[in-house]
Length: 68
Image (cartoon, rainbow, N blue to C red; front, side, top):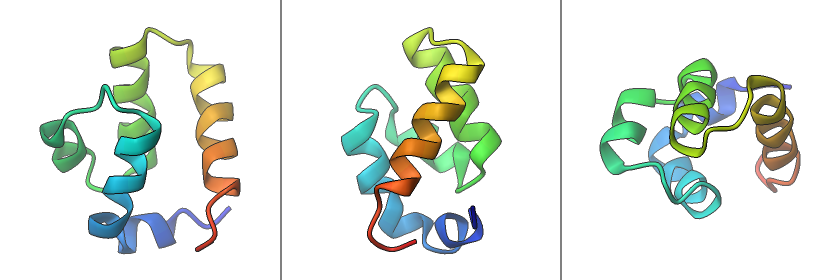
C-alpha cells in the first residue's frame, strides 16, 4: 500500500477522511497531516477501537478509494 499518495494529497483527502470518521476534528486532521500512524491513533482515541481493528478499517477505507 502506497500511503505516500495520501500524505502528498492530504488537503484533498481530509474531506474523505472526515466523511468516514466524522468524530475527527479539523484540528485532529491538521495534526495528523497525512501520517498514517497519527490517523490511526486519533481514530483509536475518538472511537475507542482497538489498534488491530483500526488498522483493518484504514486498510479497507484506503482500498476503496478510487485515487490509489
